[in-house]
Length: 181
Image (cartoon, rainbow, N blue to C red; front, side, top):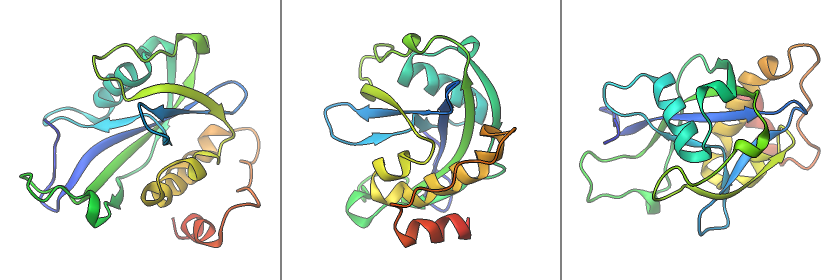
């Protein structure tokens, strides 16, 4: 059971996994065309970091020893679900997610990533992409949160150099989210 707060936001962790080439991992949703970062709900009485390691294992098969925790967002990043995705028959009602994002550096071989750690895997494929690419790949209503998470964690992802600028193909609304964040 996941934790949904009094405002209707489901507590969740998001995972940005970066490799030695400064690429990030996105997973292909099982049986669907969508791509996203690993993420998942925080259970009642579970700490965010504990949930992150549980989701890391469930979604991409990695263990704590396979990664280094580089940092996390300072607070919750929220998004609302579009009306058509709200399950009004469920109690408590969930209107969106509040997420704590973690930046992890992969220290193990990328071949350790796997999708068979649960009976119903979230992903059936993955790929390593440029830092800002996931914003284009994720479902539209999560894009502002992806922009804010990537922006906040960029100085940690690129401690010795300036983070890469957003791509020229970004629409203006994504640049606004970057500047508002």
